[in-house]
Length: 128
Image (tube, rainbow, N blue to C red):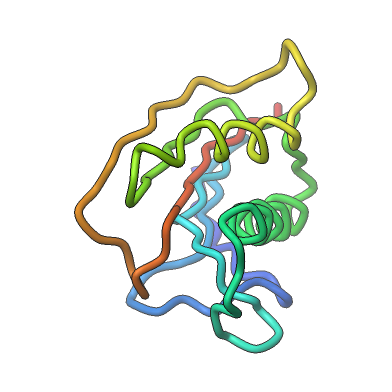
């Protein structure tokens, strides 16, 4: 199978040697996304909820570049700076999926995230 690098216009530029997404067959793997505004390349003093929305919008851009939606997401990984934010993350994150069509997921607390953000999320999507 051919490996295709997915680096759409309008998505945040990588801050290291990685691709925003990689498509192989019907699978699309995203790199972890943080709440960077792609227009400015900065974090803009977000509330936690605004930061999570920005993360999800960044992921949506990568998915859409290859014709995927959140309905195609089969697995996510969420990294949190503080597990006390779990309920807020669930509320915002869950609003992007149709009830009953939630992907598999794990959520872990980590000591530190890039640019000292509060949340980072990666996804795996599949479309036949």
